Image 1 (spheres, rainbow, N blue to C red):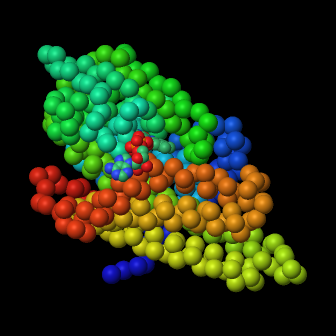
Image 2: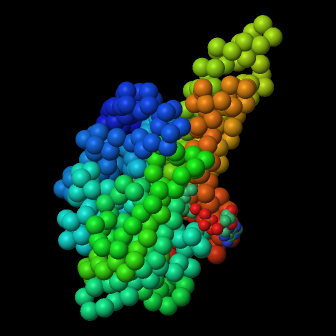
Image 3: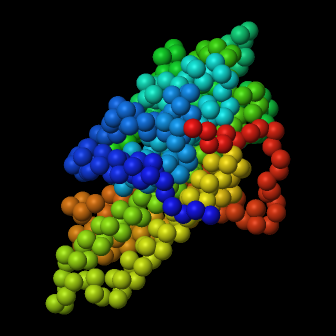
Length: 393
Ligand SMILES: Cc1cc2nc3c(=O)[nH]c(=O)nc-3n(C[C@H](O)[C@H](O)[C@H](O)COP(=O)(O)OP(=O)(O)OC[C@H]3O[C@@H](n4cnc5c(N)ncnc54)[C@H](O)[C@@H]3O)c2cc1C
């Protein structure tokens, strides 16, 4: 076992820190308040972040899943809207195209996404169902050599920014067996998107609705086979959840760093508040949460690098890290007293932002069910008919 980060990892970390300090932190407060989209996609593309963990032959940066975790941690320290780009574009969409796309689909969609020329997102959730994804009603009907898709999606990250949408639609029987995934371009006639406003957090990011009104897509837009949609989405979530967990590690660190600074500045009863043992208790919990969450993330990253199935480990990392990140942000507010309750300090934004991470990509309840069923043996890792891509530079 090796706990050292490579020189490449350390360089990546310092270049993202520098980027966040220079381009994000000076603007974030205002963008968050005004619901302005902040992530500088061009710069992120130039830095290789939009194709970070994919082979160079496909236009990726050729880095591994530890690098992906480092990127998420550092970006989320700037703002969750930046990490969301990695979760949605890289993990949920590009990883899916890498794993399931044909060579033609990779050339047409995956490579431009890795270069940052096109932005991708995934549209599973509908107004009447999120966790129970097998109940979706968006339909894709085959007619000669096209599919016609109609339906409505909601709570879609980057809905108003993305060029490509992976859309989950029903092609067959009710339940999870009748689902398929299609890649749909924004320019296809019948597509409309709409922004959602007044969210609690991720206000400097984009979340919206997607309307599909008899959208005609060529039959080669189908990802994988007809009926494989549920399985494809679950594999997408194994990657998306990993990035949410890694980002939550960044929220814990941001909460801890802000708290350490404040503990040294603020005085009460004639001394720095850091001298009070009950304040130190908060810091100790936050540090333990940081170390344990990061270890869970790195374990899942190691499994991904080897091409091993990691559904259970990734779910654990996501549930644990997001739960403890919310707790860490809450403790940070407590340490800041009344100032923590104000937008003058960054900790209330950390709390608002991380609240959503226990909801998207599997609610806490769903992750507890996943863990319970693995513990009891109701779920097991069975040999799969498909391969997980292992790290390839
Ligand atoms: C900021 C943000 C970004 C998002 N981005 C995307 C995106 O890009 N693409 C996309 O497709 N979706 C996205 N979503 C949607 C997200 O994935 C869903 O919100 C999530 O899956 C939960 O679904 P729901 O909100 O419909 O809640 P529901 O599924 O209706 O759940 C409501 C409550 O019931 C509980 N519950 C449900 N089933 C069970 C059960 N079996 N046992 C116990 N409790 C249960 C839930 O845990 C929850 O507490 C995003 C959401 C947010 C907030």
